Length: 140
Image (cartoon, rainbow, N blue to C red):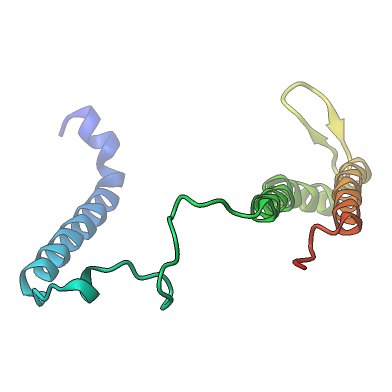
């Protein structure tokens, strides 16, 4: 066995599973295409949107509140991206009692990490209160 094949051997099962899943997906799509009923008509070919008949053009204007709510969702949802790596780091530092030493040599103990996340959460709470007072969460 060559050196490259020997290095890649642990990943062979993963490649096999991906290949089987891809083959199954192709077979299912092909079978669905072959055995489906071929009924056509005005009702069958019409646009269907959550059980309601479509009204107007799809490129119509939307209320700006839809976009604002989407941006607010992103703003408050992205906090998870920052919280996710922080939580296990804080847990390990608090549990061991040893400060975290970064690659650049900076140290951070549990108090510093908790303080940093408290400041981050405080900014989010201030932003949430600001948006609430501006009425961004009301749809009237």
